[in-house]
Image 1: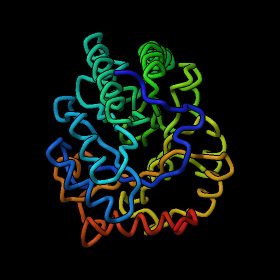
Image 2 (image 1 turned 180 degrees about the vertical axis):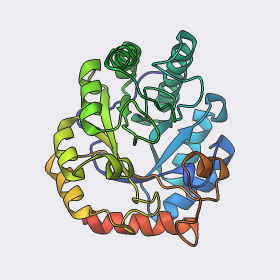
Image 3 (image 1 turned 60 degrees about the horizontal axis):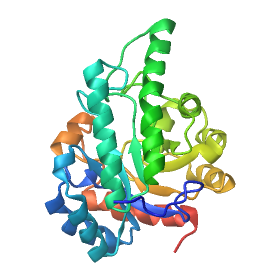
Image 4 (image 1 turned 90 degrees about the horizontal axis):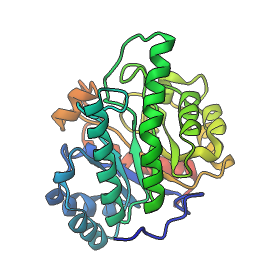
Length: 298
């Protein structure tokens, strides 16, 4: 199947609000798509972000059909970098990770999805001290693996959006500056930056300043509460964040990625030990209302 008609700069052409389906399911599967998509559409979301934990979990043709029926777009596919998927690991891990991301790109094309996003560098949870020589070796390995994937993604009209995580989830990429260094080293028009307010709340001195520094390289954005709960229901100051996104002309999706204790696997992985809201639907409904208010959208 050929590449969709997608514009990589900027991309997509209008700002949309989405929700990561980890709030409701792990793993996300083809069978769950109709119910989840209908719910998101009813609440007013424009897009769904799909964490695809294994390629066999989803039939992209059927998932796209479910999205079309519900009247919602698949805005992003979230890479789940679990054990064995590591661009700075063994040769076998690098090969497995490359095949997985390539598969996500192929599924994204079929689903009419513009972006594959997430920590596209190594397995989540890998942390430890490294000397300068080790850091350079790992950085070079990640760049070496991302270069052909960037070329492949560009040929398919899909972009790869690389997400820095906080220090407790990775030791490799924590800040906007580090993310920009990696994006520029890969040097592909299809390889962009992905920022997340939860991780930035821990790692950045100033979230708005980080967004301004990212500028044209920013292509995906996660809206999360500082406690992984409802964005706008916490201490994060959204006024300067929204102003910074508007100043750089950001046109990508703004996606709520929050977790609850209802999805046990994700709760454990993300260290969610208590309910963020009385009901998990509150995170989606209240979060979307807050985002529309902050961005001045009806």
